[in-house]
Image (cartoon, rainbow, N blue to C red):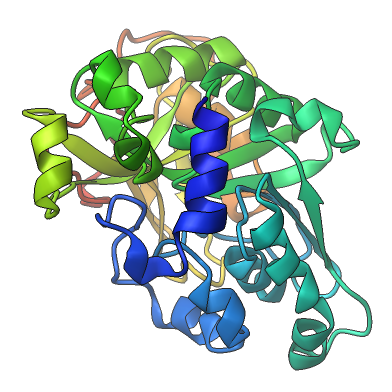
Length: 350
């Protein structure tokens, strides 16, 4: 039922972003200038048929292999195409034929615009719950992204497991989505408009964290979150007192992660060199790692950085011979208040 609701809503009901009744399917508007510059190189029709706003883009993508879940008209794919460069590759997946037709029609236009001799983008029609059916090689992607799409899925556990299987060791799932402060009533979840507006399928925070860990992502990291304001009166009447949040998470496919942030006396030093982070790298909402500064971290953060594409940009200090208990300041990854990235005040985990 939900698949048909989404296909109809995004393929036939909506004609542009202005037709959305809420801003739930948006990330904050304060995009960096470098990202806004990327969007200026994208075809007007692709932009017009993209049903959302904002853009979720992690650091260090040049030459990488990227997968975009729920790519729609291809706006984010074409933005990422510029970031990975001619040696990288971006694959977009969507289930809506009308959206994919728009995305595919403009491949030659964008490749000429970007100055690429051959296409570095590819679009597939399929379901994000069935990534294993798309012929994609397991363990072949450096980064997988998604912008307010996972909440629309009927089987979020299958999505997360499929993502985990497609990532390389050390790879990451970097995505923005909508979450709720409680489990939704069935009549709210099944309302076509509420569902199509990215609210009906929103997971309760605690359920999301459990599903992510079951899929193999041992330590989900919150990057940013903000409360959503529901401005449409008809939608607000249907959802009642439920509070919704837009949040960006990064999930790393890393080994040797523990259930809690344990302290082994480790530290890292960011040596610089990441173009998007010349002075400090914001790993998540509790880790703003300044260049050339000794930054104490828990064992999980040490492993995540050591196994990821960020490793060459760090010096790693310490070993796991002595355990000092839970890392100081370890708390929760469930933000019921607005979260801001990185204070930079020393080391901190969750």
